[in-house]
Image 1 (cartoon, protein in one colour):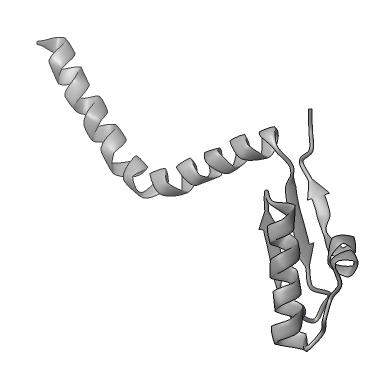
Image 2 (tube, helix red, strand yellow):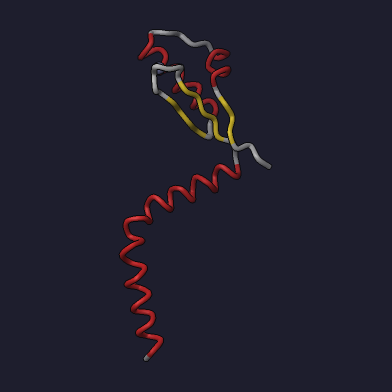
Length: 93
Ligand SMILES: [Zn+2]
């Protein structure tokens, strides 16, 4: 009897506050987990542009960066240019 009541109280207590937080928390946890495992590549457009791109795939970052430079700044970045703008994060072992 007592256990059943307690289980009900716990369920209620967990259901409400966590419903709103769960999505963000799960996402943050997944990202932390990923970051610990593999490096993240990030690149940002020089200011005043606020464009930035981040991915675990370096080629994807380079491709997005080049596409952005072309479509927003009419600039053709070479692979080397794009590569030079990419920073590696979280390559912990
Ligand atoms: Zn830009």
